Image 1 (cartoon, chains in turn purple, blue):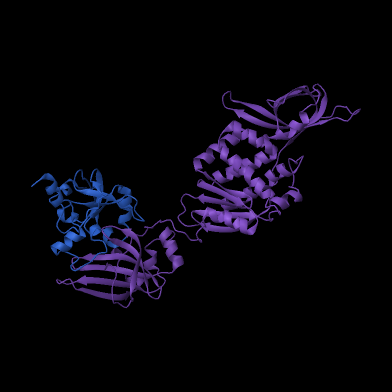
Image 2: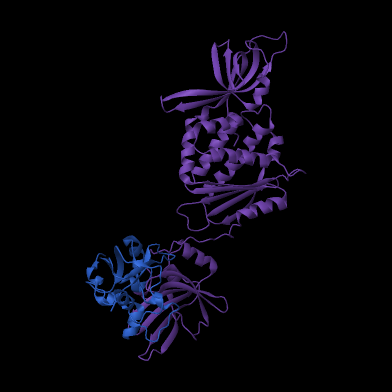
Length: 418
Length: 137
């Protein structure tokens, strides 16, 4: 290959990357023995040979030029060092005459240069390369704490960079979903608004442990080490999160699973998916822990969009918790259905019994009054164009003997404390 | 001469052994190429290897892959080529021509870092499909 000069003052050059190829390399890099990187562009052609421009370039600037952050022309007209014109002419016998001469950036003829607006736009890693998914599992074991990785394919970004606002939102919504699923797992009666209790937050807190390339990769790890058995709330939350993400835009299944999180957890899941979707990119989420085998789920942008539509149709903005004293008039433990009558307001509630309330409903007499907690998910039914609430019985407690006064039913709309 | 013998000799003698590559397929479709002349002439469709053989250019030049030097760069996407034309001074002066190359030699998709629709086209001896090319930009 003799597109590059041999025996010139530039030293022994080794061909690097060909960035533009058309009937041969037209823009390429080469490196000298002293590790100086040069960017070279075809500048002039004639029957007897060609002239090239060679500009010394730092790795950081090269990453900018390669990815399109800087126009190719800028590498030559605003160089970091002396630009050389390299003329390789051949006589009739084929002998090459190489003339290398410095040329000031201002005296390079315009028609030797790339077009003013031409950019290369080649995807370029500007962060350390992300390790393999298997490495996430290995590190989680070594560090005795669960790791979660989000890999985002950001459209229109050719460098390993990402908009600060979007990535900030993604990090916050990741922590919020962990806090709220953790709340639903750890608390018997999770508060539907207000601060996440410290006891829960201590278990679900995460630390940002790395940003790396391969599109854009965020990795967080549990702030707390696994227990002696290798388990952690963080890992339990992770499993629940994957279970939800694997369902995808299947409305009924999603709602069944969301109801286990109570309205607040469900709302934080919607917020998390919305935040993933707002990147407009394809996402791969992966996690591993000491006792959590590697989980990995690909979430293409269109799937995330479909999930957001379904979640918005569930109208989770108004998802609420209802507490009151009501009469149990129906309970089908096989089908997990219930019927309750709020005698004070003369309103009846029918829906599903949550797994955690099944044991409480088992064997209790019908037509007695109980203190109850119901989750209400107002859903938009596209078929009829109406909102229809869906109820989940979360708790049923027998009333102490002799205490049977009616109490006012209270409704609390879930709010995220983010 | 048998038909298959003719096929074997249809490639220019200057082509290296095993060139074109086995995975190249029959050229078919509309392709774009940068040319110097308006209207395009046969010289616009000579490969680097051919130019060296004729002594027009590249005298004494060696390439790391003579088979690539025996092929011509063409692209399937006009916009790809229009953009790439701006990448270096000498290409900015060239014109974009389009033509049909059905049955004229073989091609192989050879995408590059900055041009996904790049193909290498190996033309047979006596191929005149260049005559279908016309300037579009």
